[in-house]
Length: 120
Image (cartoon, rainbow, N blue to C red; front, side):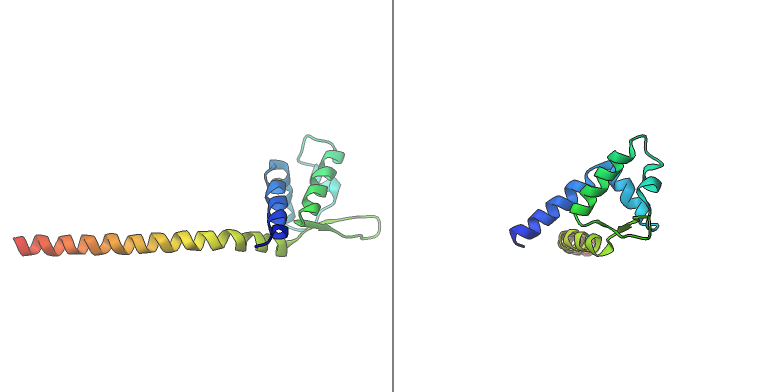
């Protein structure tokens, strides 16, 4: 992974560190929405919501399109998949370690069971 990839990861995770932006992402997972629609559940200004959307855009987590006078915001699922893939590479390593540990523990338990039968 080069420094450009690191910068993109940093940007995305920093964007997702904010609870308002995570709620915006959650809302967009159900479909596109305008800034007004995204601002409804928050006790902050539409301008503040717009700034949150800009951060998400810079992190490439969302995109905007133009539909006549509307500018709906869309989730960028490909970017989320990239983040998930990055996380999964470490999750899979850890799961493999746990599977090997489970196998060793089961092997030890079976050996102790055999020893207990032999000594009876």
